[in-house]
Length: 163
Image (cartoon, rainbow, N blue to C red; front, side, top):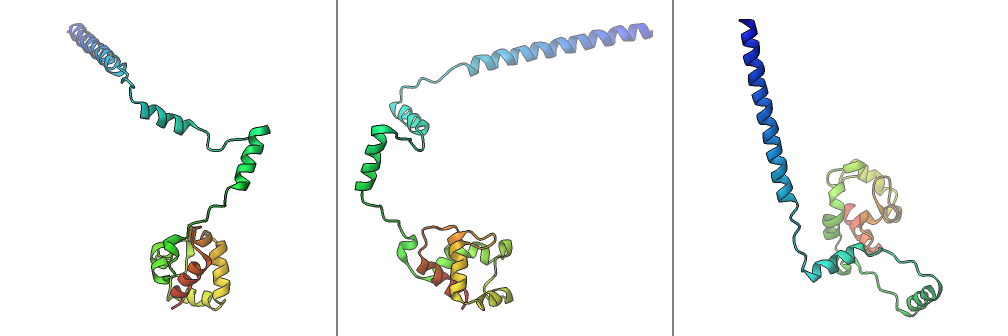
């Protein structure tokens, strides 16, 4: 009787394995048929976009091309750096837009306005705090991570924080 049970088991197992192999092959052929169809590329703007993305970020000019590029750069007027917030000196707005992200929560040890830590830093004076803010201090990046802030805007935000 055991021998009969073993034969039935082997037969059923063989059928299941055969069905699984057939199912796997069917999925493989279906995936092959679906995956090989490449879309037609008749869009000229797509080709232009691809070329723009593949263009090098910075070119190296040597010889005559380099001399011409240097001459053109010397002749071209220097572009003015745009100042953040249209040059506004509203310390509260600058604080809310740039500084509050860290200074409200105290992230990475940033002193929160109105706390003892801020009062201790305020004893250094506005000029010392301004230098720390302009150059960065500990985890704080220079100018709070906004290089387009002017010195006056940074000072205005410091003065707002010290109120």
